[in-house]
Length: 110
Length: 418
Image (cartoon, rainbow over the protein chains, first blue to last red):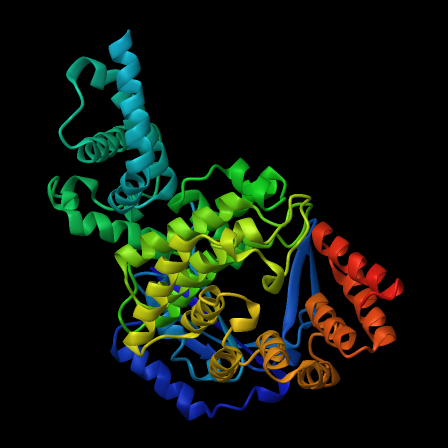
């Protein structure tokens, strides 16, 4: 089953973990066949929110949610169950600095 | 007719003794809580129909598991005819289970542990862990759980439904944790059991101080866990609960008022519980792998084995609290230690510790911190300080008997009898 591990960090901690450490973590997961995809994200200031209401496109700056932590990156992993997913998520370096939300992926209904 | 009545009694008895085991095994075989519950009820319904005709099987549990499993497969087959798109990819291959393999004693006992660890999985919200454990492991109904926690039944039902949905959708495995995870996962189980016990022993709100049923359930859970997994802290927690429980008859007056430990009639203490609890705590201490529950059990055992309050070994108790504070630093434990220090060295020594805790900003809204401070001030003859502290404690309490106790103390101060 696939789980996404969403990495959240406070603004001032976005660079607390060196990129090379995150890259090495992703490589390690990939070698063990656990990784589907992983990316780091530009800061939330670069984000754009898109909505379509009544067929009309609305584009606004950033997400509106007022939270201390922002989404900093993600790992899409393959795990047999939540226990294994938690084990894998605990190895993601920014787990030390911020938090990692582990969520199962849902299959779209045909 | 009489024979049918007799069979009904037998089925009832089997339900009481075996239904939780049957359910635990069916969850493993079917991979789904709701399907397992339905299958179990179908199996007991079938027993009521078939046992009067065919006799009670030699191994009722095995019969119930087979019957329940067969009924569930049948239901699934029937449903799949109508819902061909059911994502059955996640459903274990029920056909491949060896009909004998599940039945051996060891795997069935493992199922009960699997059930406990799954219900107490840290990925579930704490209140959902408690509700699910009482529902699935203890077999309480949702209404009973709602009533004991003074929660509306629909709220409690929703909590349980959500927890089961998370187990299914996030795929929380039906497993006993690996040795490396065991200490942390066991902590979660012990926390749930102790929470259930405390909810029964000192109900945090409401008119009655004790809700007996929940404490008995917690002790039953503790015994089950010790039987399945005799880890030192599981022994320590069961010992602690038994020793607390031994004082049930002594800790409240006939009019429902609280009686402090030092004023309790010790002849009312249940000696059997004390002996069993003390032996469990000693066994845990000998393992040298004990933790905070065992130490709290040891403290309770020192009290329980003292002839009266004056004969209590306060030095031993202060030493145990020192160890407990080192192991799990917490202002509440420091407060308890202050009480022991006051009994060993006098109220002034205890007051100094309590004031230090309050001065650094901890426990300012904790009713017992103010009640303890009030007691020390009263003993030191600082009547107006004592009165203020009792008033503060009274404003913070939500328990009726506790409020009455504090009001009695205030009235005593006002009438000059302190």
